Image (cartoon, rainbow, N blue to C red; front, side, top):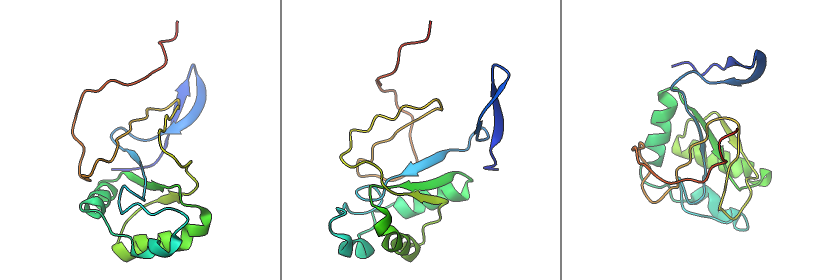
Length: 141
């Protein structure tokens, strides 16, 4: 599966590029999602963070399937070296890391591209289909 971006057009005008059908752009949190939750104020614990069951295998399977894996963390740039060392120590394959995600949770992402979110609740594995209620903008007139 190719992850090469392709041109998108809206009303005949070139827009931001998109991914091929079926390729997902996974943004994955680190603390509390793939490993134990460690606050930024205790970076000395980060290198030895306990890896959660299924996280490595699932992330690497998605990577091998051609999906884009980017870690999106509230850790700061000051934590880059220890974060990259921990990911390498455990064998994670990924495309990038984004530091500086706002802390505190209760995220509501607004974007002009499709956004799907999944809250980590203790099981890191392939996804299942589920119907849920969500908040959305009203349809345009």
